[in-house]
Length: 131
Image (cartoon, rainbow, N blue to C red; front, side, top):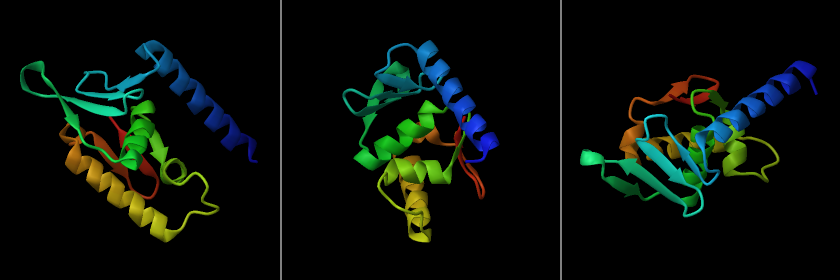
């Protein structure tokens, strides 16, 4: 293992853990403006609607896991290979088909969760970032 890669991953993990600690309860992930909340215990995606009313977005388990991975690292680049491991933990290698399917899951998330519009950014060739 390249020591620089290991150090970068440890640093990213430590930063993510610190953000989660400051965010409050471990059972929810949220954007700083609270427009999007993931209730990890109830497996629900809640979106702030008009007049502060929350609406639930119907997500598949894989879409939910993908959004949780992105929201858990809010503001950071999440590499495509990391997201593919979230979707297919037991995959021995990443294939072009997996990459295409990941892109389809991202498109579904953008369509199902209006709060992601303009916030879920593609970093071409590398991965995605939720700002």
